[in-house]
Length: 235
Image (tube, rainbow, N blue to C red; front, side):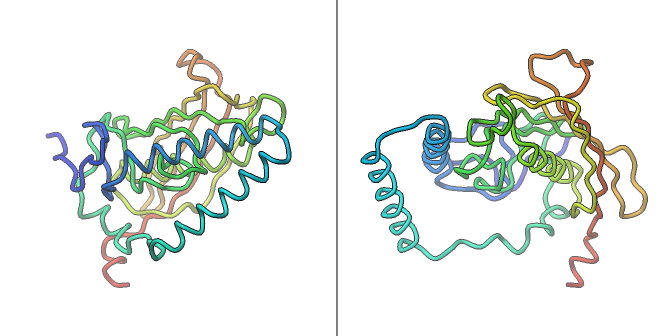
Protein backbone atom coordinates (compact mmCIF):
# COMPACT_ATOMS: atom_id res chain seq x y z
CA UNK A 1 0.00 0.00 0.00
CA UNK A 2 1.28 3.48 -0.78
CA UNK A 3 2.13 5.77 2.09
CA UNK A 4 -0.63 8.28 2.93
CA UNK A 5 -0.25 11.98 2.14
CA UNK A 6 2.09 13.85 4.50
CA UNK A 7 1.01 16.02 7.39
CA UNK A 8 2.01 19.54 6.49
CA UNK A 9 1.58 19.42 2.71
CA UNK A 10 2.72 21.93 0.13
CA UNK A 11 1.72 25.57 0.58
CA UNK A 12 2.85 29.05 -0.25
CA UNK A 13 2.97 28.36 -4.00
CA UNK A 14 4.80 25.03 -3.78
CA UNK A 15 4.24 22.21 -6.25
CA UNK A 16 1.67 19.51 -5.57
CA UNK A 17 4.37 16.83 -5.23
CA UNK A 18 6.21 18.59 -2.39
CA UNK A 19 6.43 16.77 0.96
CA UNK A 20 7.05 19.76 3.24
CA UNK A 21 7.47 18.68 6.85
CA UNK A 22 7.19 22.16 8.35
CA UNK A 23 4.89 24.36 6.24
CA UNK A 24 5.99 27.90 5.43
CA UNK A 25 3.14 30.28 4.57
CA UNK A 26 5.69 32.52 2.82
CA UNK A 27 7.51 29.73 0.98
CA UNK A 28 7.18 31.26 -2.49
CA UNK A 29 8.08 34.80 -1.41
CA UNK A 30 10.93 33.74 0.87
CA UNK A 31 12.31 31.40 -1.80
CA UNK A 32 12.17 34.18 -4.41
CA UNK A 33 13.99 36.58 -2.10
CA UNK A 34 16.59 33.97 -1.20
CA UNK A 35 17.08 33.15 -4.88
CA UNK A 36 17.76 36.81 -5.62
CA UNK A 37 20.29 36.93 -2.78
CA UNK A 38 21.99 33.78 -4.10
CA UNK A 39 22.24 35.40 -7.54
CA UNK A 40 23.74 38.47 -5.86
CA UNK A 41 26.29 36.33 -4.01
CA UNK A 42 27.38 34.53 -7.17
CA UNK A 43 27.55 37.80 -9.11
CA UNK A 44 29.54 39.42 -6.29
CA UNK A 45 32.11 36.61 -6.39
CA UNK A 46 32.37 36.46 -10.18
CA UNK A 47 32.36 40.17 -11.07
CA UNK A 48 34.14 43.37 -10.03
CA UNK A 49 32.66 46.83 -9.66
CA UNK A 50 33.49 50.36 -8.49
CA UNK A 51 33.89 51.45 -4.85
CA UNK A 52 30.62 53.40 -4.91
CA UNK A 53 28.62 50.31 -5.87
CA UNK A 54 30.37 48.25 -3.18
CA UNK A 55 29.52 50.90 -0.60
CA UNK A 56 25.91 50.93 -1.81
CA UNK A 57 25.69 47.15 -1.49
CA UNK A 58 27.21 47.23 2.00
CA UNK A 59 24.85 49.97 3.19
CA UNK A 60 21.79 48.20 1.77
CA UNK A 61 22.82 44.85 3.29
CA UNK A 62 23.45 46.36 6.74
CA UNK A 63 20.17 48.29 6.70
CA UNK A 64 18.15 45.31 5.47
CA UNK A 65 19.71 42.98 8.04
CA UNK A 66 18.81 45.49 10.74
CA UNK A 67 15.19 45.61 9.57
CA UNK A 68 14.97 41.82 9.64
CA UNK A 69 16.53 41.56 13.09
CA UNK A 70 14.22 44.24 14.49
CA UNK A 71 11.13 42.84 12.81
CA UNK A 72 10.81 39.59 14.75
CA UNK A 73 12.46 37.41 17.34
CA UNK A 74 14.69 34.62 16.00
CA UNK A 75 12.66 31.59 14.90
CA UNK A 76 13.94 28.41 16.63
CA UNK A 77 14.02 25.00 15.01
CA UNK A 78 11.03 22.93 16.19
CA UNK A 79 11.86 20.67 19.10
CA UNK A 80 9.85 17.79 17.62
CA UNK A 81 12.01 17.51 14.49
CA UNK A 82 13.17 13.97 15.24
CA UNK A 83 9.93 12.79 16.86
CA UNK A 84 8.03 13.61 13.68
CA UNK A 85 9.96 10.85 11.88
CA UNK A 86 7.92 8.31 13.85
CA UNK A 87 4.63 10.22 13.79
CA UNK A 88 4.43 11.32 10.16
CA UNK A 89 4.13 9.12 7.08
CA UNK A 90 7.16 8.72 4.85
CA UNK A 91 7.31 10.99 1.82
CA UNK A 92 5.57 9.49 -1.21
CA UNK A 93 7.91 7.86 -3.71
CA UNK A 94 9.09 10.42 -6.24
CA UNK A 95 7.97 13.40 -4.16
CA UNK A 96 10.18 16.39 -3.56
CA UNK A 97 11.21 16.33 0.10
CA UNK A 98 11.84 19.38 2.25
CA UNK A 99 12.14 19.62 6.02
CA UNK A 100 12.60 23.36 6.56
CA UNK A 101 12.22 25.84 3.73
CA UNK A 102 15.46 27.48 4.90
CA UNK A 103 17.39 24.30 5.70
CA UNK A 104 21.16 24.61 5.50
CA UNK A 105 22.66 23.76 2.08
CA UNK A 106 19.39 22.76 0.38
CA UNK A 107 16.53 25.00 1.53
CA UNK A 108 15.19 27.24 -1.26
CA UNK A 109 14.48 29.98 1.30
CA UNK A 110 18.08 29.92 2.53
CA UNK A 111 20.21 32.41 0.55
CA UNK A 112 23.40 30.52 1.41
CA UNK A 113 22.12 27.20 0.04
CA UNK A 114 22.84 25.54 -3.29
CA UNK A 115 20.19 25.01 -5.95
CA UNK A 116 18.81 21.61 -4.93
CA UNK A 117 15.90 19.39 -5.97
CA UNK A 118 15.65 16.57 -3.39
CA UNK A 119 13.37 13.56 -3.96
CA UNK A 120 12.56 10.17 -2.52
CA UNK A 121 13.60 7.42 -4.93
CA UNK A 122 12.06 4.16 -3.77
CA UNK A 123 13.90 3.34 -0.58
CA UNK A 124 16.67 5.74 -1.57
CA UNK A 125 17.07 9.43 -2.25
CA UNK A 126 18.19 11.42 -5.26
CA UNK A 127 19.02 15.08 -5.63
CA UNK A 128 19.96 17.32 -8.51
CA UNK A 129 22.31 20.07 -7.37
CA UNK A 130 23.88 23.08 -9.06
CA UNK A 131 26.86 24.78 -7.42
CA UNK A 132 27.23 28.46 -8.32
CA UNK A 133 30.28 30.73 -8.39
CA UNK A 134 30.22 31.30 -4.64
CA UNK A 135 31.23 27.64 -4.19
CA UNK A 136 34.03 27.59 -6.78
CA UNK A 137 37.51 26.57 -5.62
CA UNK A 138 39.83 25.26 -8.34
CA UNK A 139 38.81 26.79 -11.68
CA UNK A 140 35.47 25.40 -12.77
CA UNK A 141 35.17 23.09 -9.77
CA UNK A 142 33.05 23.23 -6.64
CA UNK A 143 34.95 23.36 -3.35
CA UNK A 144 35.26 19.88 -1.85
CA UNK A 145 33.90 21.11 1.47
CA UNK A 146 30.70 22.36 -0.14
CA UNK A 147 30.30 19.02 -1.93
CA UNK A 148 30.81 17.17 1.37
CA UNK A 149 28.15 19.34 3.01
CA UNK A 150 25.63 18.35 0.33
CA UNK A 151 26.62 14.67 0.64
CA UNK A 152 25.79 14.85 4.35
CA UNK A 153 22.53 16.69 3.69
CA UNK A 154 21.38 14.25 1.01
CA UNK A 155 22.12 11.30 3.29
CA UNK A 156 20.27 13.10 6.08
CA UNK A 157 17.25 13.23 3.78
CA UNK A 158 17.73 9.53 3.13
CA UNK A 159 16.89 9.05 6.80
CA UNK A 160 13.71 11.11 6.28
CA UNK A 161 12.78 8.90 3.34
CA UNK A 162 13.42 5.79 5.41
CA UNK A 163 11.28 7.16 8.24
CA UNK A 164 13.93 7.12 10.97
CA UNK A 165 15.67 9.74 13.09
CA UNK A 166 19.45 9.48 12.93
CA UNK A 167 22.68 11.40 13.40
CA UNK A 168 25.69 11.27 11.10
CA UNK A 169 28.39 9.23 12.82
CA UNK A 170 30.91 8.80 9.99
CA UNK A 171 31.37 9.91 6.40
CA UNK A 172 34.08 8.69 4.03
CA UNK A 173 34.29 10.51 0.71
CA UNK A 174 36.40 9.61 -2.33
CA UNK A 175 36.88 12.55 -4.70
CA UNK A 176 37.43 10.82 -8.03
CA UNK A 177 36.72 13.80 -10.27
CA UNK A 178 35.92 17.48 -10.04
CA UNK A 179 32.31 18.50 -9.45
CA UNK A 180 31.57 21.31 -11.94
CA UNK A 181 30.00 24.64 -11.10
CA UNK A 182 27.04 26.07 -13.02
CA UNK A 183 26.08 22.57 -14.21
CA UNK A 184 23.59 20.19 -12.58
CA UNK A 185 24.99 17.10 -10.90
CA UNK A 186 23.06 14.15 -9.53
CA UNK A 187 23.45 12.74 -6.01
CA UNK A 188 22.04 9.26 -5.38
CA UNK A 189 22.05 7.66 -1.93
CA UNK A 190 20.76 4.46 -0.38
CA UNK A 191 21.00 2.29 2.72
CA UNK A 192 23.11 -0.79 2.07
CA UNK A 193 22.52 -2.56 5.38
CA UNK A 194 21.27 -2.04 8.91
CA UNK A 195 22.72 -3.50 12.08
CA UNK A 196 20.54 -2.65 15.03
CA UNK A 197 20.65 1.13 15.31
CA UNK A 198 23.47 1.40 12.75
CA UNK A 199 22.44 2.41 9.24
CA UNK A 200 25.22 1.91 6.69
CA UNK A 201 24.77 4.05 3.60
CA UNK A 202 26.40 4.84 0.28
CA UNK A 203 26.15 7.67 -2.22
CA UNK A 204 27.40 8.50 -5.70
CA UNK A 205 27.64 11.79 -7.58
CA UNK A 206 27.56 12.02 -11.38
CA UNK A 207 27.16 14.86 -13.84
CA UNK A 208 23.51 15.11 -14.87
CA UNK A 209 24.59 14.80 -18.49
CA UNK A 210 26.48 11.54 -17.82
CA UNK A 211 25.10 8.06 -18.39
CA UNK A 212 23.65 6.28 -15.38
CA UNK A 213 26.54 3.78 -15.44
CA UNK A 214 29.25 6.42 -15.95
CA UNK A 215 32.09 6.42 -13.40
CA UNK A 216 31.07 8.64 -10.46
CA UNK A 217 32.76 11.94 -9.68
CA UNK A 218 32.28 11.26 -5.98
CA UNK A 219 31.71 8.07 -4.01
CA UNK A 220 30.81 8.16 -0.34
CA UNK A 221 29.99 5.70 2.41
CA UNK A 222 28.70 6.53 5.84
CA UNK A 223 27.31 5.40 9.13
CA UNK A 224 24.21 6.92 10.69
CA UNK A 225 23.16 6.10 14.26
CA UNK A 226 19.41 5.82 14.67
CA UNK A 227 17.63 7.43 17.61
CA UNK A 228 14.56 5.31 18.32
CA UNK A 229 11.10 6.58 19.23
CA UNK A 230 11.52 5.12 22.73
CA UNK A 231 14.78 7.02 23.21
CA UNK A 232 13.16 10.25 22.09
CA UNK A 233 10.23 9.69 24.44
CA UNK A 234 12.63 9.18 27.34
CA UNK A 235 14.42 12.50 26.81
